[in-house]
Amino acid sequence: MVVQGEYRYPDGSVYNGQWDDQGQRHGQGLLTLADGGNFRGNFDQGFYSGLGVINFADGSRYCGEFLQGKFNGYGVFVRPDGMKYEGEFKDGKIKGQGLVTFSDGRHGLPRNEGCFDGERILRREKCSKTIQRARDMAKRAIEASKTLGASS
Image (cartoon, rainbow, N blue to C red; front, side, top):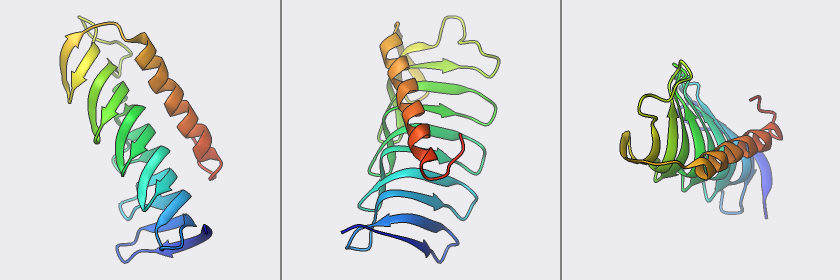
């Protein structure tokens, strides 16, 4: 059984969304963090899971897939200065194919597209399908978050 409700945590964070019968965040919800950041999206057994949008207090933002509370799958991460990574993530880190776009809209010379492990590019290669999938997942996450009253 899933119920809707709000809970205020001792640290000042507030969750408003669905809960399972074990008292865990489960289903769609909005978690507003004490530092001003927030997550809008799906929860599974208390963790961010599936599609979601997280806005960090420093102004950075990730839209895409999550697994057990971490970026995992395809998504788009944008820093406050406008630098962007579109591609694959694993266990909360950049891992796999993707594309870096700098705040001026350029991709660097040579182009920063290929296979990444963290911030390091392992090999340069075209990965148009991965980039498009990351953009699609980000768009789907934003659209899904709008059902929770989020703005993009």
